[in-house]
Length: 257
Image (cartoon, rainbow, N blue to C red; front, side, top):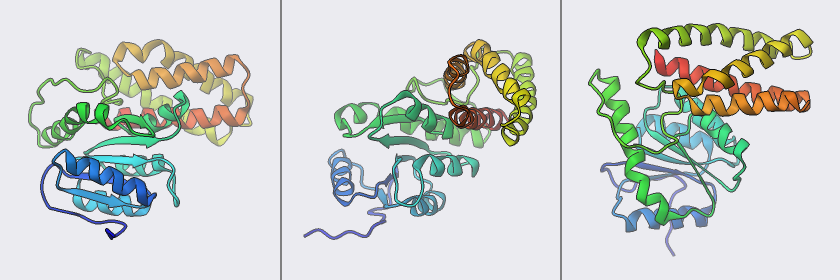
């Protein structure tokens, strides 16, 4: 019987893949799928803490991040990695397929989202696109010019469209920094009706202009939040969506810096 540590680097080679999955059978199945495709540098992590440790130490080119982990939510792991400037591509993996679940992962910093059971045939068709994201990020960090490449439609959720002028981009970022402060204060006083109105106004504004800047994830969460305000959804749900909005705005500001 094959025995394998809960987290293990099989071979040192590129590209490096990290599979974050707590189910033993799923680990072995995914491991085999990658081996069959010729990937011989695959790492495994059975929980969020292991994933953080391995990812920050070994800098994998691609992470498949299970969202339902035993110690922490996968989105928390993704956001923590992005906060620490992790450059690799991250694809969220979950049995949940609702739009709000996908939006939460993209808001945390995922580049893609696939549902269980994984359609590996489809996944491996686009895996090179995900791996190119890491190359792009590496070039950017080294001050090199990025080539325009074909990437998945859900890639770079925090990056402003390159066709936007620097002047317009700067205005948007400064405005977003101001909005971020307003949102943070509003979340601290979510029981105040005036603060809730500020959140509503910001969501409505982003719904109208985020698409122009190519920020589809921001537009999506703003549209959902604006609609939920109109439908008088419970305050706790509005607050949850607002936190997602804040995470996206932070990501956009960080990406632009």
